[in-house]
Length: 45
Image (cartoon, rainbow, N blue to C red; front, side):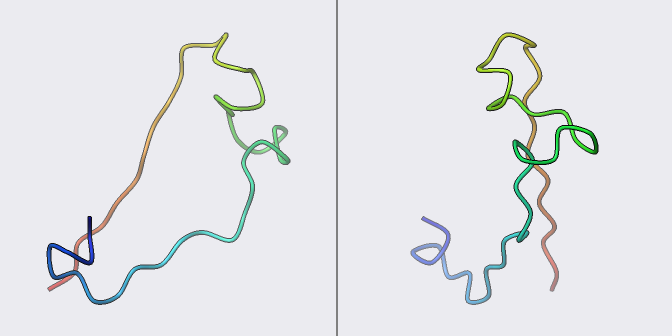
């Protein structure tokens, strides 16, 4: 969807939040029991 909208450069973080629960809250690692979920995006022009 991003590419279809004309976004040319897309990058993802190379860290697994579910594998690093000591550093991050993880909705996936908790299998949705915690109720926390979030996404961070930045658009640069």
